[in-house]
Amino acid sequence: MRAIGIALGMMLMTSPAQARWALVIHGGVGELTRAALTPAQDKAHREGLAHALDAGSAVLSHGGAALDAVEAAVRVLEDDPAFNAGRGAVFSHEGKNELDAAIMDGRTRAAGAVAGVNRTRNPVTLARAVMEKSPHVMLTGTGAEEFGREHGIEEVDPGYFRTEERWQELQKALRSGAFDGRTHMGTVGAVARDARGHIAAATSTGGITNKRWGRVGDSPIIGAGTYADDRGCAVSATGSGEYFIRVGAAHEICARVRLLNTSIRDAANLVNADIAQLGGTGGLIVLGRAGSGGWSFTTPGMYRARVSEGHAPEIAIYADEDPHPRAEP
Image 1 (cartoon, rainbow, N blue to C red):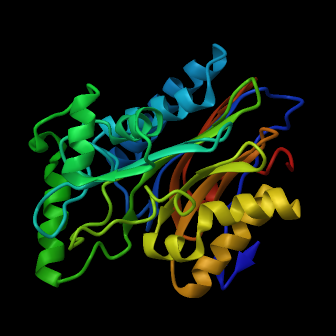
Image 2: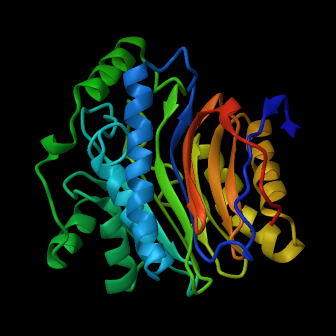
């Protein structure tokens, strides 16, 4: 399928008759080509995705909840400096790491999110605490971290998040006066279906290099970069956040699936095409209530992986790596 002249890559998971549980994860999109990545970078990202799949699938294969699985997978990616979330997050214009995250339970549509935190080791866990232990959906900055301290969420010195690669990316951006140039729009995320048929989504990010004025993208905004509803699907997005916000991308996909009976493949591709028409690029992962799922992206590559009951893990980066879909949802 093509839209606005941009290739849309999409894979589908096994049918519910074949798998009771499923997990799809991503680690960001961008100009990810074999020429752009060194062999070491390729290897590091594949290993990171594999470890995240292991963490999430360990929960699901033992009968655990989808919500626990997406948190477990995202925590691994937050701790991995290869990705733009948690340790290894990009720097703002002021030379700070400002972290955002969200999580949503498709069973109850409860959700939690945080934005602009810089001491919380795993923002996705803080987002879950907001969901479960506060009357609110989103907390920001120092208030979010004060809440985290009150509830025992692990904190680290801000220097923990720094990597030299990300620091040099900021120096380059400061010299050019640009943002990150859309080369690597790293954000991490996971969507899961558990053996009970419930789904969940989680997303975490460091945002974009050289961001200013407390900018917040789509990742922690429920309905834009993160959404889950047992009646439809679960979505986690990555890319040009401002466009995903304007489209309400994650909710739009779920609404198409739930109200129009659109397949998750078509819903994801149609929304990505809409974003492309507006001038944005990016990708998203989707998992339907029946257990089928995959990804759609409008960039040369996307860090992505999937696993489901009875099937071996599959990990990919480049657009030409996808095999033929197994099943339509």
